[in-house]
Length: 221
Image 1 (cartoon, rainbow, N blue to C red):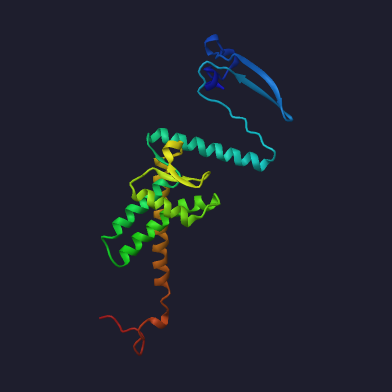
Image 2: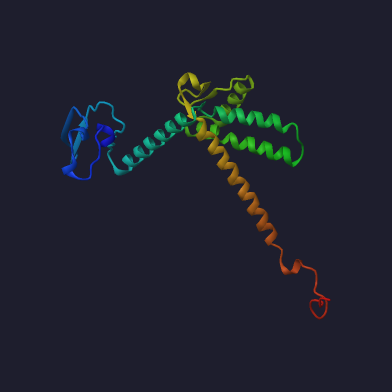
């Protein structure tokens, strides 16, 4: 309320002065559903606002609340870093293309690992296509074709089932969120690989060890 009206918070009513008061054009009580709520409107330069979320069920309200929180977080990240990337699977498709080109410089297991990373990147556009009821194979082929033509902003328009320039549609994502997601996924994969090595090493049983000499371990000199 202090941020919205420009008022100053005081701890003692007797210390309240005119200079502590903020400004609001309208202060009214309204009944929303079964609850009475106070609305403070038309402040001069509000630094904070309240969003009233309503829905038919508690589940619907929770979903709306989660969506709003994600949207605010995304906007905050975009403003903080000051950089955005196109959405619709465009960054993942471009990274996958670059990885496959990079994999050609290697052979053996290294090449397989890089190509596997590229396949993992394409899970995002594949999931977008599947969730939209589109054929993921046709969409990925079209997406790769557009990126081979150096159309780095090409992504999936799920409403039309076409590959289009995402920036022209205003479909963008914060760079910070995208890079953090890729970094976290990579670190998780590396952790699983390390744990797998530990488990493999722990499978060695006593039967795998060389036989003990008669009389037990030899004494130390």
